[in-house]
Image (cartoon, rainbow, N blue to C red):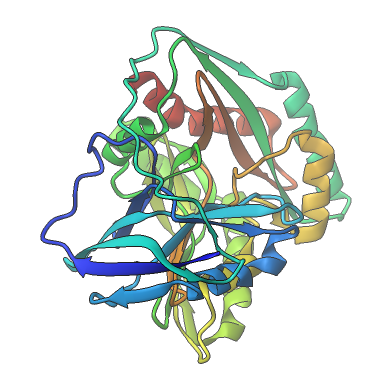
Amino acid sequence: MEQLLAVTRLADHEPGQDDSVENIVAFSSPRRSVWGTGTAALIHLPAPWPENVHLVAEALSQIQIEDEVGTPGSGPVAFGALPFDRSAAANLVIPRIIHGHAAEGARWRTEIAPTGGTGSSAVTPEGSGEALPAVESATPSTVDLRSVRSARDWCAAVEAATTRIKAGELTKVVLARELLVQTDTPISATQLYRRLLQLYPAALCFVIDGFVGASPELLVSRVGEIVRAHPMAGTTPRTGDVDLDQRRANELLSSQKNRKEHQITIDMVHETLLPWCSYLDAEPVPSVVAAGPVQHLASSVEGRLSRPTPNVLDLVAALHPTPAVGGWPREPALKLIDELEQADRGPYAGPVGWTDAQGNGAFAVGIRAVELSDCSARLFAGVGVVADSDPESELEETRAKAQALLGAIVRV
């Protein structure tokens, strides 16, 4: 295979992500954003993907690097929307041209091209991969939404889950509803991503291979030796009425069901990351974070990684799936999801993000996201089911969570 060279230089400004290009990959956060066009190389992770994440670091290490910036996200970057199913294979892409900026002000541009030499077969060069002109995407005049399963059938699945939990088989399981959207005009992934950036600037917004979302939840990030996570679990609707939303936030904080659900996730994240760290702190009391039409219990987890510092994808493979999207204990929860959900989640609730050649990176939990294909879209909305969950209340929660994406699709 041809050897690749990545050259990174400081940029006076970052071209706006609203430039007239269509096939971008991107991951945006308040701390650091990276986006790219074209395809320099593809990386394939054979099944099961968590056991093969080392192939990403190996592939990136085969690229020659000239980097005058030297910040997390500069140099070659691999983007991926990894499957929820740990037994599946996965693919990541290294864009040919990558732009980035950090909250502290640094901006850079990386360009990757063949050198004429040969490198490892771990990297598959894909040619120039120039960005395509933006496709005109009119606002859909008709939008048809349907649930793959009836409300009654889905509520019966929730009821079955509570029965199994009460029997002691597990503590919590996350069940998702699959929704299909059909429009009369193609839905542009890039334009939907830009719309989500405008609507949810504090979210982790992404577009990778037709998977587009605005996740409120950071699975894990690594910047040098600093590791962060921002797990969420426990949800209540938002209405836009300040007083009502504050009352609901207070009720969420005092809800035994939601606090228990949240603590399960925090404990798992803390216990999983702790062996990698010289210290690790988690907020003792959760806060309430607004995320579009809902609000969540959330806690920040931050620590310093021990040396040798693990790659961010090692942390991703260890953490995924957290109880916030799978349940607890992990194995019986995943088995029950397979039994009751009757759907392949694809990248929904899987890790989505980026990593660089130094092992830095950031991965969101792939929720509040949609898979696009021409005039159709597939999305999931999930809820955490515990012993005292009410099926009708959980159904309403899925409707609230789907609302944000549906509104953005209509406005694209």
